[in-house]
Amino acid sequence: MDEIDRKILNLLQEEFPLDPHPFAEIGRRIGLEEGETLQRVKQLKENGLIRRIGVVIDPGKLNYTSTLCGVHVDEGRLMEVVEAVNRHRGVTHNYEREGDLNLWFTVIAEKEGDIEDLIQGLERTFSLKIYRFPKKRVFKIKTFFPM
Amino acid sequence: MCRIDAVMAAPNNILKAMPYDFPLTERPYRDIAVERGMSEKELIETLSNLRTEGFIRRIAATLHHRRAAYACNVMVVWRVPEEDVERVGRVMASFPEVSHCYERGRGSYWDYNVFTMVHGRSSEECADTVKRISTETGIVDFQLFASKREFKKTSLMVTNG
Image (cartoon, rainbow over all chains, first blue to last red; front, side, top):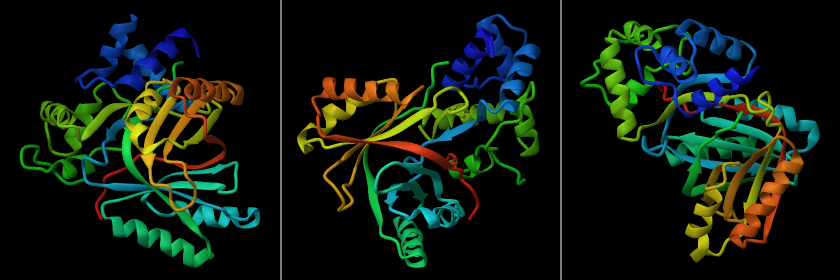
């Protein structure tokens, strides 16, 4: 990865141009031809630096609700629980963290009831006590990693 | 893939038809549009409207932050007096190292009510950011929970059923 790749990554994180020739547009900003820009982006994707390029939706605007869940899971059963949690389409994030509540995941759904059903199902199956930290106010959602 | 009538379709249906990951071609919008029976121009206009209306936050790349040298991500929970949440939330959100900042319910578990995600190249960098946030907001009761393993990270996909 060189300086040009860094510039590309910074631009792409801010915005993928809504333009018939998005790669020409990015290239124009950093002095590259369309073809080379596209080639570099492909390479950054293949190298795994870029996860995806796409539409970032505002779930709230589409009337989705979401809840953050924290739960203590014994080490020996962790992977089993992780698999069950990840199987749900409404689970968008799932992290092992330090601390007593060692597994944290977010559940998103169109109906509040669907979130509860999912959580209660997991609680029953694995005899867990899952704590819910529902979203009340959003101050920021913007992941940008300066490269 | 079903055909989309750009004029008639509800935002949900248009977003349902968008690929999670755009094709890496010279004309990605044309390629997406053609598959869905739209013109490139129609698709670009539709997406532009959805962005203006706020259904689309942005169209952009998401990185693998660990591979992009941001090895550390810490969830920090803060105890903020109710009447101070608005001010503190705004200050925390202004830190570029903070990607998410929410007021959340306490979950009948603890007294912490503001949650932030802090990113850095190392745990020292993260700890330093947290210290600066604390100084700037005056919130001194907080806890850090560093991530150990990432098991899932996706974005919401609007899908059928």
